[in-house]
Length: 68
Image (tube, rainbow, N blue to C red; front, side, top):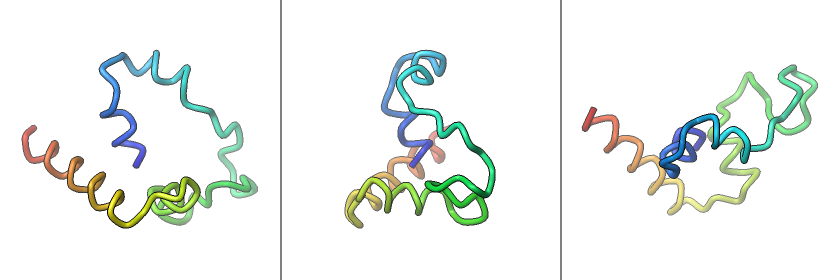
Protein backbone atom coordinates (compact mmCIF):
# COMPACT_ATOMS: atom_id res chain seq x y z
CA UNK A 1 0.00 0.00 0.00
CA UNK A 2 2.75 2.42 0.92
CA UNK A 3 4.66 1.56 -2.25
CA UNK A 4 1.51 2.07 -4.30
CA UNK A 5 1.04 5.55 -2.85
CA UNK A 6 4.53 6.46 -4.02
CA UNK A 7 3.75 5.12 -7.49
CA UNK A 8 0.77 7.45 -7.81
CA UNK A 9 2.92 10.56 -7.96
CA UNK A 10 5.38 11.84 -10.51
CA UNK A 11 6.73 14.28 -8.00
CA UNK A 12 9.82 13.82 -5.93
CA UNK A 13 9.60 11.98 -2.63
CA UNK A 14 10.24 15.27 -0.85
CA UNK A 15 7.05 16.74 -2.33
CA UNK A 16 5.08 13.62 -1.51
CA UNK A 17 6.42 13.67 2.03
CA UNK A 18 4.84 17.07 2.55
CA UNK A 19 1.41 15.61 1.71
CA UNK A 20 1.60 12.31 3.61
CA UNK A 21 0.81 12.62 7.31
CA UNK A 22 3.53 11.50 9.70
CA UNK A 23 2.50 9.06 12.41
CA UNK A 24 4.98 10.82 14.73
CA UNK A 25 5.16 7.80 17.03
CA UNK A 26 7.12 4.86 15.66
CA UNK A 27 6.98 2.84 18.88
CA UNK A 28 4.76 -0.03 19.94
CA UNK A 29 2.49 2.47 21.73
CA UNK A 30 1.34 3.94 18.40
CA UNK A 31 -2.47 3.51 18.33
CA UNK A 32 -2.69 3.19 14.54
CA UNK A 33 0.05 0.79 13.44
CA UNK A 34 1.42 -2.35 15.08
CA UNK A 35 4.94 -2.63 13.68
CA UNK A 36 5.03 -6.32 14.53
CA UNK A 37 2.30 -7.00 11.95
CA UNK A 38 1.92 -6.39 8.20
CA UNK A 39 1.73 -2.63 7.74
CA UNK A 40 0.07 -3.00 4.34
CA UNK A 41 -2.75 -5.11 5.79
CA UNK A 42 -3.28 -2.63 8.60
CA UNK A 43 -3.43 0.29 6.17
CA UNK A 44 -5.90 -1.58 4.00
CA UNK A 45 -8.10 -1.96 7.05
CA UNK A 46 -7.56 1.59 8.34
CA UNK A 47 -8.54 3.10 4.98
CA UNK A 48 -11.30 0.57 4.23
CA UNK A 49 -9.61 -0.67 1.05
CA UNK A 50 -11.82 -3.38 -0.49
CA UNK A 51 -10.53 -6.79 -1.58
CA UNK A 52 -10.83 -5.76 -5.24
CA UNK A 53 -8.84 -2.60 -4.57
CA UNK A 54 -6.21 -4.61 -2.69
CA UNK A 55 -5.86 -6.99 -5.64
CA UNK A 56 -5.47 -4.05 -8.02
CA UNK A 57 -2.81 -2.42 -5.85
CA UNK A 58 -0.87 -5.67 -5.40
CA UNK A 59 -1.09 -6.40 -9.15
CA UNK A 60 0.24 -2.94 -10.06
CA UNK A 61 3.17 -3.30 -7.67
CA UNK A 62 3.99 -6.80 -8.93
CA UNK A 63 3.78 -5.64 -12.56
CA UNK A 64 6.12 -2.74 -11.91
CA UNK A 65 8.60 -5.00 -10.10
CA UNK A 66 8.71 -7.35 -13.09
CA UNK A 67 9.46 -4.45 -15.43
CA UNK A 68 12.47 -3.23 -13.47
